[in-house]
Image 1 (cartoon, rainbow, N blue to C red):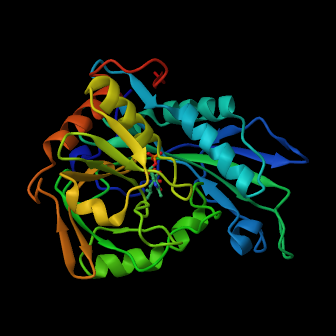
Image 2 (cartoon, rainbow, N blue to C red):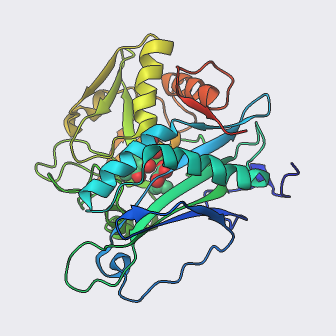
Length: 341
Ligand code: PLP
Ligand code: COI
């Protein structure tokens, strides 16, 4: 398969229109058989539920070219399950997990020419999403839905790749207790647009959101979970019912414990204890593991000892092991890697 003429090493995290996408419709109480199609545009009624009441959810995962030239993806079964949870919370029908995984494989195979080569620094980002499509004007769920998957080659989410970033403590809340923070709904990202634009204008790469009820505990950023490393080499990750259960974070917890012999704590993390940590990072499909050098709390800086030049040593080990597993350089735990070609 001849690859597209793309400067793989210099692409950022953006959208590129690729050749094929997957589409399936839910009508009369069932999903149709689905198909790979060419058209990247969607035409919908002006009153579609997605436009009026934001009934839309999504997922994100990646495909990689391994050292020995296969295309694989990482734990798509967990994305399928999380999407079912998101659907249930927004009164949408669930797309079956086995069909989700098959559709991911089909759409990646169809776009094989866009899967970045091994070692290029780029990967293929896969975006499954679902929306309510029939006209709805009284507030209620749609009856008809579209499930789609597109793919796009991507580079690092944050400019500078592995360079530590500076983030700020947000004055806005991302998710309410008993709200929708734990699912991947478009509405969670809509409300984060104002604070992220403000943060970027002020020179920060991301926002740290605190728990909405007490504003004393660390939740997550707009698009990633946190990891912290203690001075005695433990991995600590925030636990909360209102953050997205990151598949990357859950995988890093296993990597830390089983591959690196670290102690792992998944617990509430108080904002007050941040200055005690040796290293901090953001983790997610897009973020992979992005080191955080400083957190700005209304002008007061929390500077991690790992500094602003490079990833801290433990974060680096976690990064190398996780990406080594994803790219087929390190043996993966059973069931983590799905071969596509
Ligand atoms: N938190 C938020 C708000 C996200 O948007 C994402 C991205 O998917 C994550 C965390 C990381 O989740 P995952 O590791 O499953 O990509
Ligand atoms: C992902 O990591 O897949 C996400 O959806 C995060 C988003 C901010 C790009």
